[in-house]
Image (cartoon, helix red, strand yellow):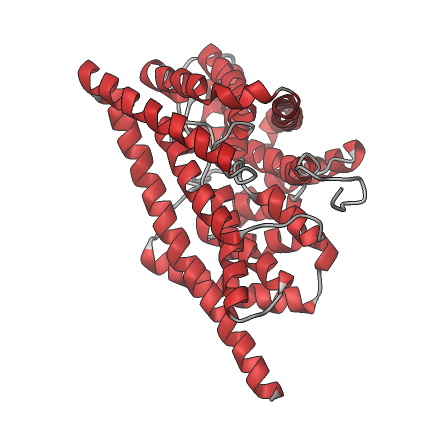
Length: 419
């Protein structure tokens, strides 16, 4: 009987990994296509086509707002809800979570909201883990936690980073069971994902070595990235608190939609998940435009995360770090043109620092940085950046953005119990 139970557990974990790999691959493909179609209709179409697309989308978003009012609690990235679930005080309906996050997030991508697909990938994967557990009549929170790690891994096609993310996000339940189940589910979902839809959410390539004489530029990037991470956290938390205090904020979704469609039409660099920023050098964009984009994205990410839509914060925070690196590089490039040749180093260091502080996950940030670079040429500046980011986390006693948002879920108390 014990052998049969072990085999059933292995089968359950493999099935979870298999379904996550298939579903998240399909989701990432669909998200990519939705973003392309939204870009075409709102960026490049004729005026008539643009107006028709806008009116149809506005009607859809008004209905989406009503649906989210009828079925509350399933917007945002979904990750804070899983944090509360793991803590034992927050209840999740996995079917509602999967469906609502899926629909909400694709709608947000189409409209150009500054939200990413990795957060929904994590919550959808956690929902899949819960559903398979129910089918097997098992209450296995460790497998659900492992499922969220698999969602991260499959979204970025970065299994090692996904495994470390799993550990950093689940320190309270860390143990050999988490390691084993995490390895099984993440391995299966990754190999399925890379076979079904081989994509790249981090299209940056660091292939140069930073000369020591430009170390002071790296220091400026580190300082500005730490400040940027704190501003990002402030924006997300401020607008979440504002939306809770002022219920009328939830009815602003059509207005938010109008704003983003106008921005997408006339200032497209300022909208979207951030993949455009990650995928382009933007060396021909002026310093002032980059600064304006940074401010707009910092504010609008907080606004959209607090509205009745869904989307992840990871790609926006990575894009913020890259933007900071670009801005610092552009500034010094005005006086030292040769500094522009090392822009990718400063961008990835900024990206890793912002992620490390906002998510309180320095090891995952380190691995994401190494994913786009050569260890031999980049480990020193990246390592210094992560070390200083870790120091900032300890000095500020910084909690992750998901922990801060968990505290703002309905029914939260300081003891993490339902009230």
